[in-house]
Amino acid sequence: MSPSSLSTAGVLLITVPTIAFGGLALLAHIMRDIPGYLDNPVRRGLWRAGHAHAGVLVLFALVAMVYIDQADLSGDLKTLTRVLIVAAPILMPIGFFLSVVRPSDTKPNRLIWLVALGGVSLGAGTLTLGIGLV
Image (cartoon, rainbow, N blue to C red; front, side):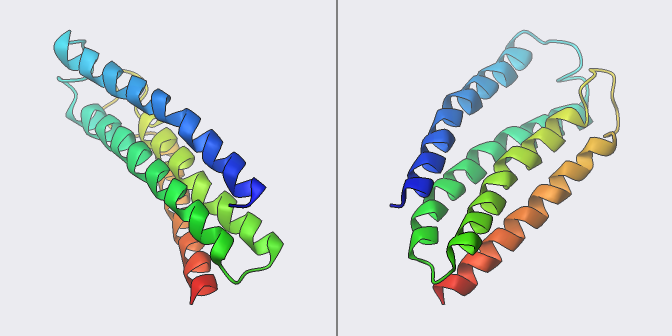
Protein backbone atom coordinates (compact mmCIF):
# COMPACT_ATOMS: atom_id res chain seq x y z
CA MET A 1 0.00 0.00 0.00
CA SER A 2 1.05 3.57 -0.60
CA PRO A 3 2.04 5.69 2.39
CA SER A 4 -1.08 7.84 1.84
CA SER A 5 -3.40 4.84 1.92
CA LEU A 6 -1.61 3.38 4.94
CA SER A 7 -1.94 6.56 6.97
CA THR A 8 -5.56 6.97 5.91
CA ALA A 9 -6.25 3.36 6.90
CA GLY A 10 -4.57 4.02 10.24
CA VAL A 11 -6.85 6.97 10.93
CA LEU A 12 -9.89 4.93 9.87
CA LEU A 13 -8.88 2.11 12.22
CA ILE A 14 -8.53 4.59 15.09
CA THR A 15 -12.17 5.61 14.53
CA VAL A 16 -13.44 2.05 15.08
CA PRO A 17 -13.31 2.28 18.91
CA THR A 18 -15.26 5.55 18.73
CA ILE A 19 -17.94 3.78 16.70
CA ALA A 20 -18.00 0.99 19.30
CA PHE A 21 -18.29 3.61 22.05
CA GLY A 22 -21.22 5.14 20.14
CA GLY A 23 -22.89 1.75 20.12
CA LEU A 24 -22.45 1.52 23.87
CA ALA A 25 -23.96 4.99 24.24
CA LEU A 26 -27.00 3.92 22.21
CA LEU A 27 -27.29 0.78 24.32
CA ALA A 28 -27.13 2.90 27.48
CA HIS A 29 -30.00 5.04 26.17
CA ILE A 30 -32.05 1.87 25.72
CA MET A 31 -31.12 0.16 28.98
CA ARG A 32 -31.49 3.27 31.12
CA ASP A 33 -34.61 4.42 29.29
CA ILE A 34 -33.09 7.88 28.86
CA PRO A 35 -35.79 10.35 27.80
CA GLY A 36 -35.61 11.48 24.19
CA TYR A 37 -34.44 8.22 22.70
CA LEU A 38 -36.92 5.36 23.02
CA ASP A 39 -39.84 7.79 23.25
CA ASN A 40 -38.68 9.76 20.17
CA PRO A 41 -38.92 7.57 17.05
CA VAL A 42 -37.38 10.18 14.75
CA ARG A 43 -34.32 10.68 16.92
CA ARG A 44 -34.00 6.94 17.59
CA GLY A 45 -34.18 6.12 13.88
CA LEU A 46 -31.69 8.77 12.82
CA TRP A 47 -29.21 7.89 15.56
CA ARG A 48 -29.42 4.20 14.67
CA ALA A 49 -28.91 5.09 11.02
CA GLY A 50 -25.92 7.28 11.93
CA HIS A 51 -24.30 4.52 13.93
CA ALA A 52 -24.91 1.89 11.24
CA HIS A 53 -23.63 4.12 8.44
CA ALA A 54 -20.49 4.96 10.43
CA GLY A 55 -19.59 1.31 10.88
CA VAL A 56 -20.34 0.15 7.37
CA LEU A 57 -18.76 3.13 5.63
CA VAL A 58 -15.55 2.96 7.66
CA LEU A 59 -15.18 -0.70 6.66
CA PHE A 60 -15.93 0.19 3.05
CA ALA A 61 -13.36 3.00 3.10
CA LEU A 62 -10.73 0.66 4.55
CA VAL A 63 -11.25 -1.81 1.70
CA ALA A 64 -11.28 0.99 -0.87
CA MET A 65 -7.77 2.08 0.19
CA VAL A 66 -6.35 -1.12 -1.33
CA TYR A 67 -8.17 -0.55 -4.60
CA ILE A 68 -7.24 3.13 -4.86
CA ASP A 69 -3.58 2.18 -4.97
CA GLN A 70 -4.29 -0.24 -7.84
CA ALA A 71 -6.41 2.18 -9.89
CA ASP A 72 -5.15 3.70 -13.12
CA LEU A 73 -5.55 7.28 -11.87
CA SER A 74 -3.15 10.19 -11.55
CA GLY A 75 -1.71 10.93 -8.12
CA ASP A 76 -4.01 13.93 -7.65
CA LEU A 77 -7.05 11.93 -8.70
CA LYS A 78 -6.11 9.14 -6.27
CA THR A 79 -5.88 11.74 -3.50
CA LEU A 80 -9.27 13.19 -4.45
CA THR A 81 -10.82 9.72 -4.58
CA ARG A 82 -9.36 8.88 -1.17
CA VAL A 83 -10.76 12.10 0.31
CA LEU A 84 -14.19 11.61 -1.25
CA ILE A 85 -14.52 8.05 0.02
CA VAL A 86 -13.28 8.92 3.51
CA ALA A 87 -15.58 11.95 3.73
CA ALA A 88 -18.69 9.76 3.57
CA PRO A 89 -18.23 7.99 6.95
CA ILE A 90 -17.65 11.41 8.49
CA LEU A 91 -20.41 13.47 6.88
CA MET A 92 -23.25 10.98 6.86
CA PRO A 93 -23.19 9.99 10.55
CA ILE A 94 -22.62 13.59 11.64
CA GLY A 95 -25.67 14.59 9.62
CA PHE A 96 -27.80 11.87 11.19
CA PHE A 97 -26.66 12.66 14.76
CA LEU A 98 -26.56 16.45 14.67
CA SER A 99 -29.87 16.83 12.85
CA VAL A 100 -31.69 15.72 16.01
CA VAL A 101 -29.42 16.75 18.88
CA ARG A 102 -32.06 17.78 21.39
CA PRO A 103 -34.19 15.03 22.96
CA SER A 104 -37.28 17.03 22.03
CA ASP A 105 -36.45 17.24 18.30
CA THR A 106 -39.21 15.58 16.32
CA LYS A 107 -37.91 16.48 12.88
CA PRO A 108 -34.39 16.86 11.54
CA ASN A 109 -32.82 20.30 11.28
CA ARG A 110 -30.83 21.57 8.29
CA LEU A 111 -27.77 19.51 9.18
CA ILE A 112 -29.55 16.50 7.68
CA TRP A 113 -28.16 17.80 4.38
CA LEU A 114 -24.76 16.51 5.50
CA VAL A 115 -26.17 13.02 4.87
CA ALA A 116 -26.87 13.90 1.25
CA LEU A 117 -23.47 15.56 0.91
CA GLY A 118 -21.85 12.40 2.25
CA GLY A 119 -23.84 10.34 -0.23
CA VAL A 120 -22.69 12.51 -3.11
CA SER A 121 -19.12 12.24 -1.87
CA LEU A 122 -19.39 8.45 -1.64
CA GLY A 123 -20.95 8.23 -5.09
CA ALA A 124 -18.34 10.45 -6.73
CA GLY A 125 -15.46 8.67 -5.01
CA THR A 126 -16.64 5.17 -5.84
CA LEU A 127 -17.50 6.12 -9.43
CA THR A 128 -14.03 7.60 -9.91
CA LEU A 129 -12.44 4.54 -8.33
CA GLY A 130 -14.51 2.19 -10.47
CA ILE A 131 -13.54 4.02 -13.66
CA GLY A 132 -9.89 3.91 -12.59
CA LEU A 133 -10.09 0.16 -12.09
CA VAL A 134 -11.82 -0.67 -15.39
